[in-house]
Length: 317
Ligand SMILES: [Zn+2]
Image 1: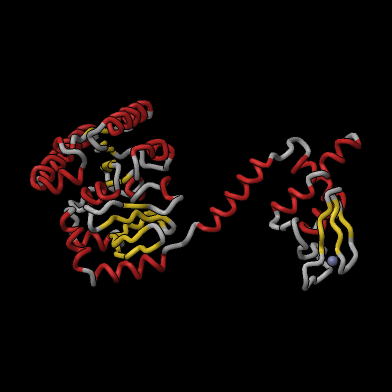
Image 2: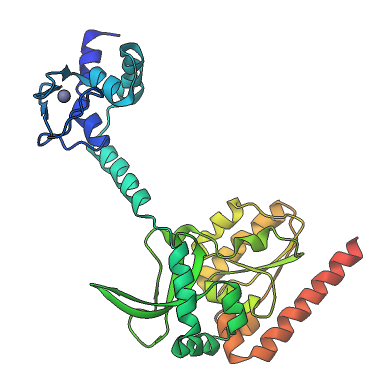
């Protein structure tokens, strides 16, 4: 390796310190593991070195890696090449890395909140009334751990039914649907399937819907169902673990997006020799509308389809 290449690699000291969480624009805590620095005494200099005014050490990039990652000089040198040898990090990459780090930090765990919100639902008649108006009975709501909470922030004030999707993700539905904001999900929650265990459990048939409420509409009738979260998550469904002996029933929304993604699902099922059928939601916009507007027809249609599929499956065996 040429000297200029080494110098080039060493010029990443500031980047390295920043990605490790040190602010190089002011004094920071000394990185020397043997110096318990009580007042930030280390300073970064633009000619690619740091100096501590407490213990007196001076490091370049290799020394800094060695101190922070507890490596000897040779190993630290290898690390430096691994980090900065082939590609020089652009400010954009650094920014992206920082953003990812921050997002990981802010992905909250709502487990405790869910318990609290579930109890709140038990005491909230308005929220229960909302659920019933959407065709979801309380036993089903309890089975899926639904809750109630008032979300208040500077740009939001919403009394909502909370539908847990995972420990870190939920969907919140405004119980007053005529208000401007009808629902929201925490920022990073767009890429999770709802009730995904429906794809791997022992039940021979699994319906696929878009929304969580559509999924609950089938589950309220005790029909095994997974919710994509949005039609765009068809790829996520395709990549997820599933029992390929199941028969899947496609029941996406009756609109252009729903149609497009149904097509993609059909192709996937055909290619992988997975049994499937389609359900038209009795001509309504989506399963929840069908359930709310004509519960009898919805129930009869889905069960007659299931019966037909079970008969076919039995005949094959
Ligand atoms: Zn020091």
